[in-house]
Length: 457
Image (cartoon, rainbow, N blue to C red; front, top):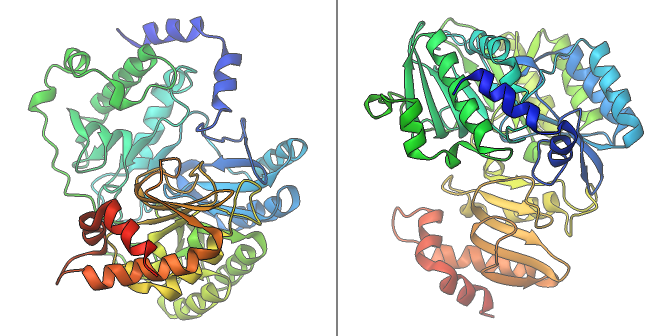
């Protein structure tokens, strides 16, 4: 089975039907198919290489204010979202993107190391691999039979690699000339299927795309039968990954690279900013010598080109405009959606509650867990299991370790949320053993212990 077979498969399905599916809940809201949300239409963009000049980023912010509600978000995977658009303004946004000469490649988003070509410790430049994939596998990548949320990661390695990012297809640089291809997982858990030259890696990715197209629209790498995988990759059992265990990418703060250059990482509070705040920060950074930005996993971006002596002023301004430029902030461990006031589907103001929780229960956030604050059961802000608080008509659903749509371990009336937060924090403080993390303590307490703690007066 090869690429020609995949082309034949593509022709059997109507593109209109595939396009309609892309607009369904769970599809990627690309520029050509924006997603309806509670505050209008949402568009998710992945600029080529995750790279923008400051002028381009400012142009996007101005366009978001002119044609949407002025709210921009950076996702956990380092993609950009523009909210509050209307059917008649999406085309105007697209025109602004073209006028700013921002390239947004067609097909599934391909995430590459944010400091590609800059990090002197990376094994090879993933941007060249992305270009090879897009040029040689163009028709396969455009197949309507691929899942709208298919994820492809190209990791160049180095200090700012993507080992923590999960993907359907992973391509990892082992050296300047050798690449590892793996499926279904992050750097520590993905299943390696092939290793070899750049050309061999491109061919392996093509084979995986063929398998996914054969399985049908909506299929992900986890759906590939191991026997089928073995048939297409006979040496799969002999391939071994050499990537270290996943670790969170360093983002906020000043980072000095091995060649002496410096980059500054910033993160908007809970991944969301208003166009006016973003524009003000970009104007100041540009005046201070910043030359470009790189979007990064973890809901933030890096400033490039700043001299070290200019960094303190940018760090202070970042805080003023709602960005964090300091590492170790507890807010990093909260995933909060737009919430009520910004999204019509939200039942509570997620960011307001997040600040109250940070103030009332800071010890919850020891880095061992993520708190997901979801205004409704859609769970837009976090697609993985977490300690989750979902908004409902009656109040809140608390899920100990799950998704926003899961059955709750406890239901909390709207007026009792502050009491519940206080009781949860106190229960963890009282029951946590020496050296035990918050996540481990919650797991040990379980749903029964959690319920008992929240019901005590």
